[in-house]
Length: 91
Image (cartoon, rainbow, N blue to C red):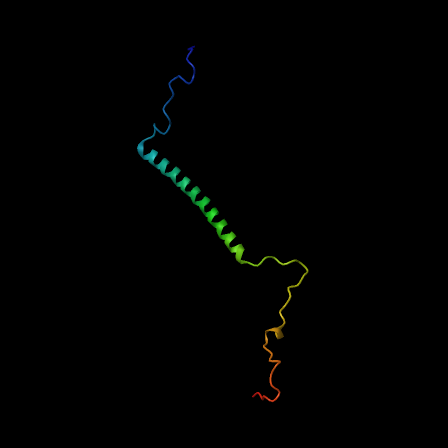
C-alpha cells in the first residue's frame, strides 16, 4: 500500500482524449447543438414574455362580473341646433 494521497496519484486520461478525431468532433458538435437549442429556447421565452407584456398594455382591463357596461346614448352623438331661428326654414 502506498502512502501517496489520491489527489497526487496519476490520473487517467479523460475519455474524450481517447476518442478518434471524427467521433470527438461529432460529440462536440452535438453538445454545441444542445447548448444552442437551450439558449434559443431561453431567448424565445424572454422575448415572448416581453411581447405579452406589451400586448397586455393595449388590451382593455377585465370588467367586473355582474355590472353591465354602460352603453352610450345614440342621441348624445347628434348635434341638435336648439338655438335655431323659428323663421328659418330647412329643406
